[in-house]
Picture 1 (cartoon, rainbow, N blue to C red):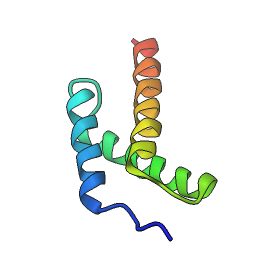
Picture 2 (picture 1 turned 90 degrees about the horizontal axis):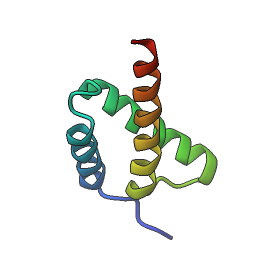
Picture 3 (picture 1 turned 45 degrees about the vertical axis):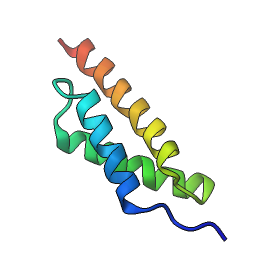
Length: 72
């Protein structure tokens, strides 16, 4: 059976995305997107590898940035 990913792996994902989206989204938004991505991955696939969570969260954050840009 696969070992669950180390919590440090998710911390690294959060750090990478907070840096990438600094000036676009508050840190709390990044955290919420990571949590939502983790939950969604678990619901759909039954696992939430950090690389998968990162890809899903990045897409969420990109979509939110587009929506915010359209409101301006």
